[in-house]
Image 1 (cartoon, rainbow, N blue to C red):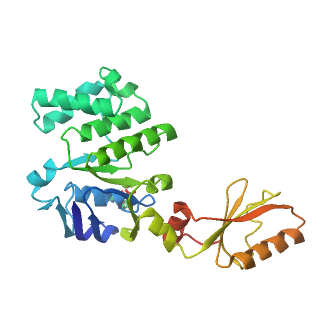
Image 2: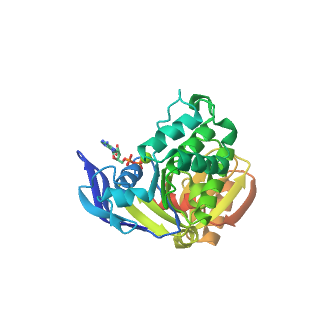
Length: 302
Ligand SMILES: Nc1ncnc2c1ncn2[C@@H]1O[C@H](COP(=O)(O)OP(=O)(O)O)[C@@H](O)[C@H]1O
Ligand SMILES: [Mg+2]
């Protein structure tokens, strides 16, 4: 559905995207995951033909994205900061959007009805966009992106700053659309959302650093994880042990990355005993997406 080859873009001295080759298969939900500044928005904008790459090309539904007319018909784009018109109602926003695509009134009314039902906004057609909750605003933005019935939906951090329940609802809608055959390319900084994608491209410093299914990514994590609970609240208490590769403290437990589970367990037990601290439990846990990405991003090891 989307193929990019050697895609690069710089802004002055900043190389925002560097030599990206990405393939989004038809029918997939592909997550583009990475920290702020990784280059996600720039990549998505090039894929949608909104900015011109310095190098490389984008093939969208079989057409170079530069041949916008054919490519555009297939594409729905929900930008990172959607500029809804706060002083227009939900329906007026949709009308405004549809006008850009020259949809006739009958088609528009029918589609709007369908999509508003799907996004659960039917009851709010006359409400001003300014008076919608954060989650509902995002759903309205999605409704607008869907008005052309695209085969491909590109969403740039659609759930950023939205409460967990609305995020869940939003993903249910994405799944529904995907089941109906829509290909979804979605960027996110939320690791739990990465788990919901069929394939995940992890981006950092302008490059795709990993591309696999969530399960595949977790399998490729070369280390093991220990969860340690102890009667202590010092985040740095385990920092000096050479057997531990990384330690993070979440308020009630320590998450420790190790090579050798038994050697590390022993070292932790001895260390705490020597400090007279009660160890409550120590057990192995499966690596989470967060662990995988922390490693991929080459975060500084403690
Ligand atoms: N229009 C622009 N002008 C200058 N620098 C930009 C512009 N857009 C993005 N950048 C820079 O490119 C890098 C990647 O940004 P962006 O694509 O927005 O990443 P992300 O969406 O992953 O946060 C950042 O360093 C950002 O400051
Ligand atoms: Mg962005």
